Length: 396
Image 1 (cartoon, rainbow, N blue to C red):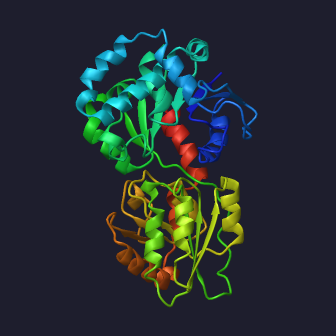
Image 2 (image 1 turned 90 degrees about the vertical axis):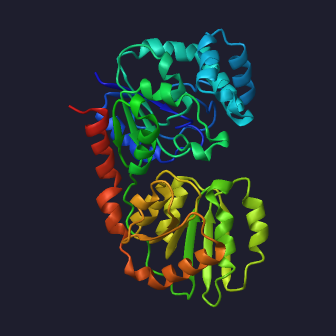
Image 3 (image 1 turned 60 degrees about the vertical axis):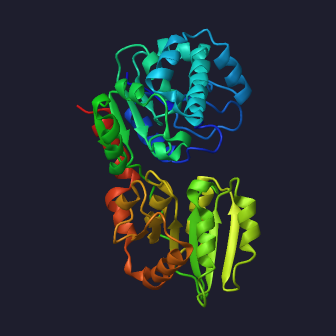
């Protein structure tokens, strides 16, 4: 009997990690049983999973519970004191704070009876950590000789995205993995340049999206329909799109941004000052099914992503699956998906005026791109996940 112990953040509870929904059926087909263990997300609605998937209770509760359990845990403290100095976490307040918060998180899990039970009960299971942080920090404490695999994306990989340019326990995580899997070649090269002596086996394996067909034909109105989809947080720089649209004159543009976040209300206020040829639609947060439904029932001429840092965005994969060209910043692994057939890349330090210039060029040339072909060759779930299982999880 083959079993997979699958560590997630909240999936299948809460609304995060929607891209796992694309992968889970392939995992379920490959293993007799998939045991899903989120580290957060107690209570709330649970998304459907295949019949042979078993969802265990989340390891941790709310922040107050984590702090209490982490501070008063009976778990050995020597490991955390030692690495505070070996990692030189004392070099800055930001590093020290991050190290302490992660250590408290780890000790809270180590004190959890469910973690101890899982550590003993599933010794025959292959371990798959969807993130290179979270429960992956506990890899040195997991018993037994078994296959251990972790995926690395963006926020769990690029230290520049973190305060103090620091993610704790990188060496310890890599030393205790059988294979480290990166969602982009850029991510793999980044990790190898920093941690090569500690990485046993590095692989690049793209995520993938489901085929829902192509977007509907262009609308009969004269407007150009532009879409972006992300949280409204600093790293996504949604405000940069708004600033660029101020420079678009003459051409009627309808911009829809899907997603909410701390900056949403400010974005909505400032959007009222856009020129009359710009129409804006801010529907807020949507789950993945609603996003797909939007693509299926609304014409979209161009997709925008102007993040200052990325791994390899699933949002772009979804857009090109509908044959929608993309204008994006050249960050992380984005250049691996936004090729010449897909769209255009702009520098990460692009100004609003320059972004507006590239946007208007893309509007003019949008019929010259064939993004669907790129998706079919490299980002189809039906190709990528069976290959991931065959070549990474269960290689012969």
